[in-house]
Image (cartoon, rainbow, N blue to C red):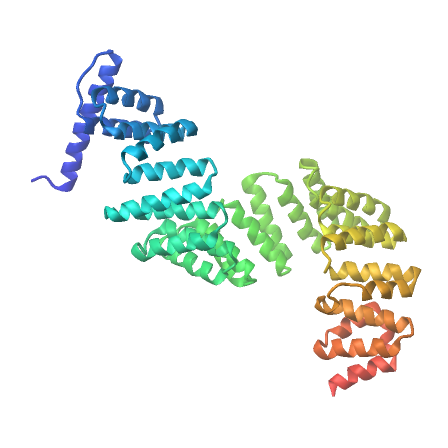
Length: 474
């Protein structure tokens, strides 16, 4: 008796002999006889090797010798599907489905064609038919593969709940299926269930501890959960496994920025640039790290490099504008900030930064216009609301109060908005209303006092406000 390895070697040797005989026949333009099973193996060999023209030639020959074997027609449909001849593939599959109504492979191939045609409803329908057929035939390994393809089809239409449902069925029967574990983690990420996502990425890493992409994805999820320590821990593993994995270095930089570790952020972004070469966005983020350290000359240098590489990204224009404004070159700052807004007109924060520079230059109407647009983009943008109210108050305190009172869902906005409203009421002589509003906010959140003194430092000398602060301290 041969053992399995010997049997495999014997099979490979026999197949290679048959393949050589077939290729000799084609080269010499002769005709030899091959049984249908051997021809199926030869055709599958050409398909696996992506030698599709040879595959079609073999199919044509096979159909001449074995005209009743429908497998050859199915292989032709699969090659047509691979080469983008989808209508031709579908016509063949429709005929095959009529003649072989319970052929699992026909259903799978048809589902794949519908998927490529973006007919997701029919793709799902035929994947489900294929699963039913494979279950009936007890083809367990096929059921797993098909169920995985069905899950991916659900993902393609952003139906992550059904994708999770199918992947859970797969994992119930095959709990070690690494592709399914990785994919279900991704689905949980997409629906925002980060705890489940972490559970499955961790499970995947237990089986694949050297998967730097899995560690990287785990780091991303911890970052989204604002677990900075764990995010850095996961990113660190990613770069230990693959030192040249620039995405992990980049996200480490972003994470360090989040916790004001600007020097470490600089090190991460610099490593990124060493790996990938000069990249406009990375240079801009590096510049911001220097900016936050108040190393403005270095920040400007990197912002300029970023802008030179790609003048169509907004970040360097914004960064230069902010630094110019800090240095007192407000006119120059406005020019740069205007360009940033032109590039990203839907960014409410950029419009606020521009409005602040315009306000400092006493270009009140222009600032007001930017803030109104910012609030169209983000109606709950507290800083924009407060600055717009301040500008309106310079023209008319009553108009500013009217604006604040007209805000939809004022009670749902950040506390700072209502505190500023109380300041306006006080300045307009509506002292009782002002004190009641401030007292309500202060009793809920003592940080309201910081907002009060930021926008109305005189309140520190006003007995009525001091009494409210003392009341809470008591």
